[in-house]
Image (cartoon, one colour):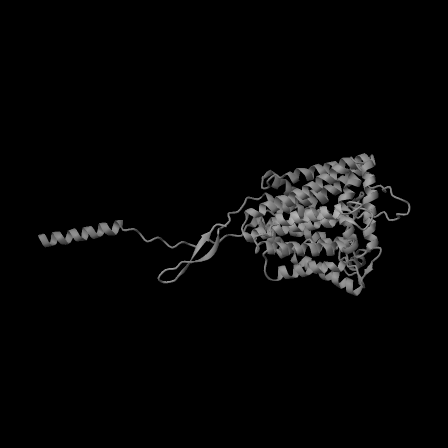
Length: 473
């Protein structure tokens, strides 16, 4: 029947239409990122090491002439983890790695040449292998991404803040707190003397010398300023870093001032197009050349002229100790020239009889004095190369990550500048090479895609609406 046949045809067509009708897409399920367990383990290893660096020296036993502090025991135990990281190829090779390895090998060889005994060379070379090599490569293996570094900064914030508060309390009360407690527990003596400057005792917390504590705290200021962290970790760490000024050390105060000024310039460079880091470095180099060329004595001369003369006059709390560093440069370089390849080891250096102090507060110079010019050049070269690598790498990251990387580069640069007035040893030496190691790792990680900046563009139309369009800039 025609009516029934037409009805059946319509039903068939409707079924076909329903079959081939485009299906509505299923709603996307939000993917929740699982926490990276390996990252927690890696960061935890670095955090544990930093807290062990804060253990007072009174808890350090000596075994067979080897100063076996808790952090050294920990680093030796972490060797297995470093070997597994090397075999798993989680680290990317960088030239500073080779320079650090060569420097440690040269230090061991120089120790044998100057001492003449294998035992002494093993003790001296072994201690530097732990403090330099293992600390450097543990940081290389532990901190691999900006996220790892932020986790590290959050977890060590209480330690930084506590150290700064103790320094302030010691400076005001004129009494050692941490090391007095450690001496009472272990029976080992504390520092032989304490100094007072500008009415404050030089606080040192758990470090063997105030200047080591001050430069340790000052190194955290640029990182936390540019970390992108919010809340209490950033606030308490910045306060703790600033309290490092109560070590009454000119190196610490200079580090804090320079770190803050570089942070301020970085802030301006993001807001003023013409304020670039190339411009800053160019003007800094020109200023240095002008100061030196207008001096009659040149770099590190004995008069209060020249670039270092300005630091002696205006950036030192004690002009006597600052002038001693000038004398150290003069007579120390003479010792290095006479022993350029392997140095003089840990023996006493030649100087006039009227220069009674045997203190050698100059890290870059004492490397050449003890172990020869090659060791100093390798370590200084690795440091400068790491800073340059990270500064260049920061340009290929989004703004928040780029700021963090620049903060690390500034921190290492400020730390390196402060080493012109201090000689590192033990925990402070290990922290410097931890900072160097994580700098190299961040500089060798893959670049991240940078999203184009969004700006509001007014599009005139009948409804007068504004739309967001990407602007590549």
